[in-house]
Image 1 (cartoon, rainbow over the protein chains, first blue to last red):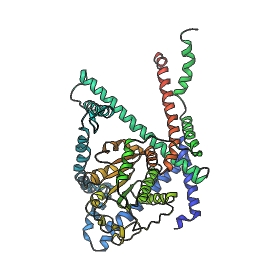
Image 2 (cartoon, rainbow over the protein chains, first blue to last red):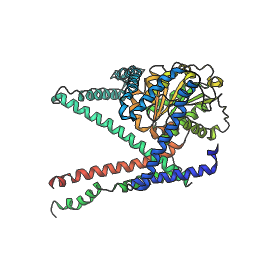
Image 3 (cartoon, each protein chain N blue to C red):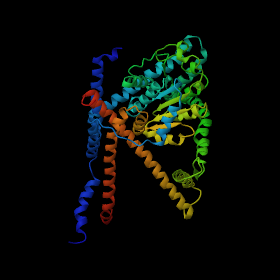
Image 4 (cartoon, rainbow over the protein chains, first blue to last red):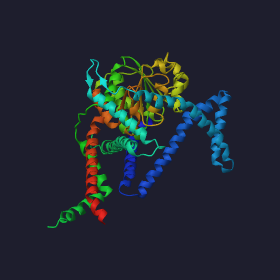
Length: 217
Length: 290
């Protein structure tokens, strides 16, 4: 393909590298180069998504069936056009109908599965014996400790969200323990987020040093 | 010497530490990340339970099995997820699985092609010759999010009528006899968000009973932990997970190389957190007095 030609690859690498540096320049301070790169990114993303959905959605799921005489697809086609009428303020209310359809369809599709996957199965997962024994019947300290911790954390965390009773006395103490468990959870999530951002930075630095400057393998 | 003198000499330094310019932090983090990349060193990592489970689950899938790879990510998350995709494909090549690739994200199938090219470039697989349509197929992207998985549960040929190259699914040898998700021995999901692992668990696992592992970005890993065990056979989370995955499957790659920089940068971050907290508590009294 023409995109695999070394000249184009080199051109693409230089454009990518300069735009990367342009975006990174924000770390120093907000500047026109950053603004240009940001606007370019937003514009190209919008263009990419439009083209992508045109060829993967609109054409094969509406255009092709219509050409083959399948008039049933006119229903979602018309609903799609109704959705776009939101852009015309005077008749924007028409878009509520397809929106209602989308909301209803999504709720119907997800309600049962969400309840099953994120409530029922999680409840089943939580109901475990607190004391753990190995296959030979020996007491296992760490698995038992972990399960005790999970049980205590779940119970204390749930109590914290019980707002119809004032958080004081023994109830307040347990709910405060619940906040500690919540804080540890948020801390772990934040730690993972930091790791994710670092990974993205490593990816960009690897691109600059390896693909662009050829300083590393 | 009066009792207040040591505080007088220490406080300005600690206060300076609390007002440290963010650009200094950026530079130090940058140096910490860049410096290790120049050295050919890797870090031996303890393997977490979730990654061990993922590796064991893949190992339990028999040679020559039919495996579905759902590549639901795009280039922005590639630094984390591409090494996982490469490793999962290497395991598939090693075990001679028949691999069917799909994407619920538009760029997922392209990333899968890059990952497959990268896996085949490995010294271990230099003699492997794959025939597209026989040993593997890339069915491309299909829009519709979770509705795609739902439809795959009953009818895959109508969900993906053509492959990535535009060849009708009926003419692809590997797709003969494949009707729905139940025909697959295992599913590998590489996920960057919505639609991704959560939707695969809800529709693929809980509804149609597929057995699956997930490779997900660090940001969404904590949300996926509760699924491990009953719903997910294993979880590879973030670059750390990717490095462990490479290590345990004996397919060293980019994640293991990048982990050194990641670890050094984390040490720098932790140092700044410690300095910030020490400075905060040490200067709290003087701030109160003001």
